[in-house]
Length: 595
Image 1 (spheres, one colour):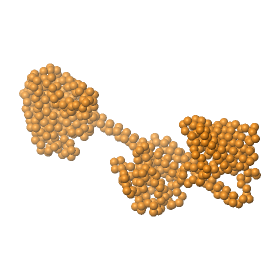
Image 2 (cartoon, one colour):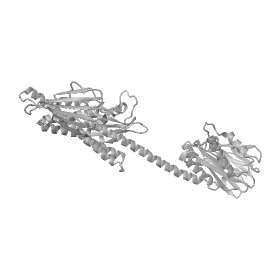
Image 3 (cartoon, one colour):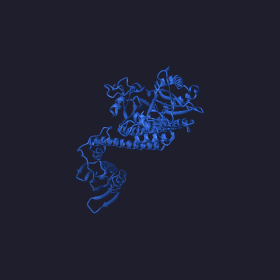
């Protein structure tokens, strides 16, 4: 702010310039007060001019846009023996200055500044121009330092009333400033305490308790929208009697069951007086009886978070506009904290789930054999890739003797942890029944009976295929529980045989029957057990890999002398090329036996 007194003219003048910043208004008013006091202006006139200048500068600053905010405001005060003239120039777009302003309602937030200027000054003229505006305020000086002649009783009575009104306005302004200070002080304090491990419910209660102190209200009731149901449920209340049942929210109610629901649906403040203006069945009316207050919907972005009701006992002395602003400020701050807490909770839950999945994946991987047992004259290799961190596919190889093995492949319906759990249970059951391993159909029937209750309870099932391999007799005995057909080549020829014994998936019927199918293992044969994740793999165009493409791959490798391990790598690479880095939509598992 710069100051330039000018005493060369007939009137004594003071010139000031200040930045478009509310912080510079107070120094400007103090400079004006000192200037006028120096030239004999009495106390009442000093206060009037000081307040009028403060309001004029506040108006100029509040109406500034991004462009005019960088331009300075000019203040010029001229003091003559009979009159004080104050000019405030700004570069805003300006506003319409009314000829006469009535006293604003106490709940109204605007109009008090203009009313105060017109009440304190004898005249005020607002000159609105293009690029620059000027507010001219004039006040007549009393000849003997008295603001008004004392011999006019009617004028003195009017002035007394006006002074009382002005005093009330100034008191309201001071109250608003005090409330704002206390509000921001509380918010800053809670913001600095956010690092402490305080639950959201305790945090909300502490914040709203402070709100009651600042607004001089008597009670509050905070309801939040319950996830899933969408009901308004009590989250925090100042009194036990306000712990009322949840309120269902209707999208188009003909008659809301409660004013809290009405505020939530209309998304605007609802005022209430518990004296016949609200249904006697309304929870607030039942809980609080005769009281007054309002309900504010708490909204974050476009999302309804809940409602907060604040009230005072009795029907007199309602909440003022300043106190309502405080409630709005606290509600906005609370909405941010609620959303942040929910995001943080979701993030923590996601981390916990990710950790659980990682543990489950490690457990599932540990169930897969790191080294597969081998048979003399045969090679064996396996591959398993889950669509998610854990899946329902698995394979197992159980060595029964030096010349025999049991090959197991299965696919649990679904993905994730439940599927992985049933895969682990089935693996354990198969390994616990070695006496039935030479008879795959009997083994499947036994496992089905043991798993039926658990699978049917959760509406899940398992497809599986077992193959008993006897290297001494060069034969294979297979059984299937609704699984993909096994593929086997016959010698060096191009013929591919599909082995698919009858049998429904495990968990469908408690006493389901299964059949065995025996097949000789010819010289240089290839055997492939797989899950449907291979045939149902899709490329970038959505085309399936399909059964025919898999059979063709087997046919082309019928006279291939590569080992089982090399064939496994080749098939995995063929699937990867087909999918072209597309995400898996199902687990992919297979076993290859090569003679």
